[in-house]
Image 1 (cartoon, helix red, strand yellow):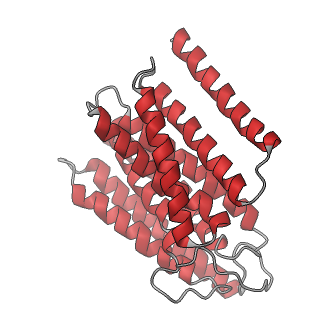
Image 2 (cartoon, rainbow, N blue to C red):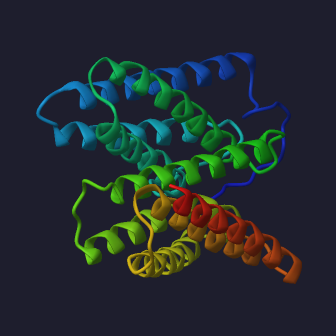
Length: 276
């Protein structure tokens, strides 16, 4: 398995290729995003909740993203598992957004909510496509978008898991946080880890560490969104430090910057919790 297939740069922005190829790519992304939006709307509006629709959203995100990434003109994905690492984030986003929206919206609000979640999904899929070629001019912008989508998805899951009306056993909640963190860490780390087994190994480390943070959060005076933000900061800190380590850029200054941002965020959570 390989996380990224490098190829000589052949010009173009946002995936390169001919104008016809660019138009075809855009049409595929819009078609997938539209199908995702309709599936999400069906999941939110049909009562009782149909779990099979949630699974269909995940399958749609996986197959659709796989086809779009494989169509990149500057890569040579041939094996079935070549694009595997590009699928973790789209699938997790599709699941996380659906589960989160189910708990916060209803009625006519489901329509704008589904539309609002479809736009980030389209950008996410396009960013996965661009990030398949590290020599692309839009690669770094794509990585920024993917990282933003990763942290957004993490918060959606954490906020859902820590809803006040959701009664979960501590062990179940901790394991769920760990699994979500593992899945989302794959996209952050694949850029530097390069090989899939190595990426998955470090993603497992992230999952284990954030799960420990979730266990510890149970004994802190944090509830609902405050706990979700705490875990998001823990996820940000662990993935950020590991990403820098894999890229051989981790030093005292970098570690201090990440630690400082996480500390400021945690301080804001504590202050907000006391004010509320």
